[in-house]
Amino acid sequence: MKAKVFWGMFVLGLLPFLIGFLGKYHWVLDGFSHFRVYYCFYFMFLGVGALSLKMKKEAIAGLVFFLLSGIGLVKYYVPIDKVDSVADIKILSINLLSSNNNSDEVLDFIINEDPDLIVLQEVNQKWDTNLSSLGSKFPFKLTEIREDNFGLVVLSKVELIDPEKIILSNSGVPSFYFKINMDSKETYLIATHPLPPIGTDYFDYRNEQFTNLNEMVKTLNCRTVLIGDLNTTSFSPNFNRITDGTSLRDSRLGFGLQPSWNAQIPFISVAIDHVLVSKEIEVTDRRTGADIGSDHFPVIIKIAI
Image (cartoon, rainbow, N blue to C red; front, side):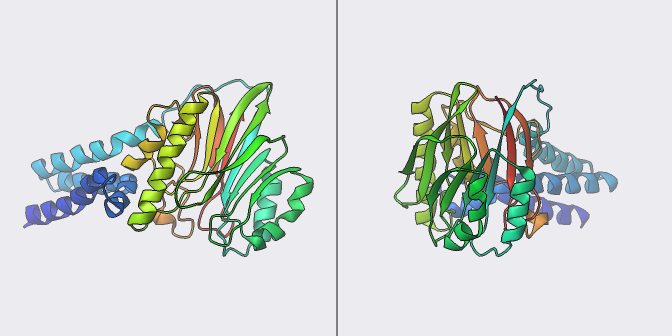
């Protein structure tokens, strides 16, 4: 009886774990790919439970899949070599949540963090008005105000060179592309917020945007930072559509998984807010910020100049 219960629970965890690897074929399958951490702990629970009950075969099965599901998590916690940097540039990414009314909390958070550059997502007219006081601290601004959760704003203390609004998929949602000068080193930044993969059309639009981002980064072939709510985790097979053939790497490496969504349901949180950096760029700090009333936690990153 105990064995039947174990194997039933084992299959219950195994199926979604394996289905996630087929995520490039359908948006529903893709949804199973994001919960790798939870599969890892689930198999650990099964393996340790079976071990305590002296169920040898069952314990081996549970612990083997604990290792298989967890192997991809280790790299996020392996310490990286710290870089001695005379100065850093601090970048802040916030998905505000268009319906969020806690503008005072957001303003206080931004002022306390004092970043050099901010990428804001889900900016509607209300948010643009409520954050207008930041103009004195951040004189350089790119704005695309929308009421459909895909408004995008960049605020900066440093000059934004050759800025462009770009459309990277048939969804029509905007992205920004610009350069900044970091100690005489030209660095390209791409701010983007693709559609969530809910339904076949949105899934295809998001993946199209990923493919076009990939081609853009390959064309630039230089110091690049890609930042925004990408509506995917790094465990999705579709994440590779962005990174394949580029030197982009996840800025979380060495800093932990740092789940950013859903801030309102912390026990089921995943990292969909990303900062990807090219190999020439050294990350000196990376963390998530406090709850500001959004369904996303802010992301804060420091890059060595």
